[in-house]
Image 1: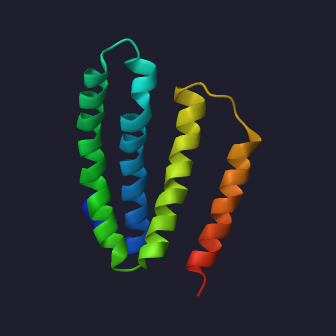
Image 2: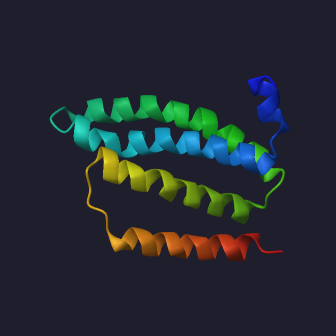
Length: 122
C-alpha cells in the first residue's frame, strides 16, 4: 500500500493525532529550544528563529484541527492537543533540555488521563 493511501485509510482521530504530534514537535522546539541554543544571542534572533519554526507547527496544526473537528467535539480536540503536548514535552524536557525526571510529570499525566476519560466518554 502506498504511504498516502495508508494515511488516507486511517481513521480521522489517528490522522489528527499524528498531525498533532508532528505539530507539537515543532511547537516545543519553537517555544523552548532557544533557551538552550540561543541564550547568548539577541532576543530578536531567538524570536525570529522561533517564528520560523512555528510556521511548520501551524502548517501541521491547522489541518489537524480541521480534520479532527469533523469527527470530534471542540473540547475533545483540545484535550487531545493537551495530551499530545505533554507526550511530546516530557521527552523533550528530559532528553533535549536535560531536565530531571520528576514525579510531577506522572501526576500531570494522570490528570490528563482523567481529562481524556471524561471528555471522550459517551
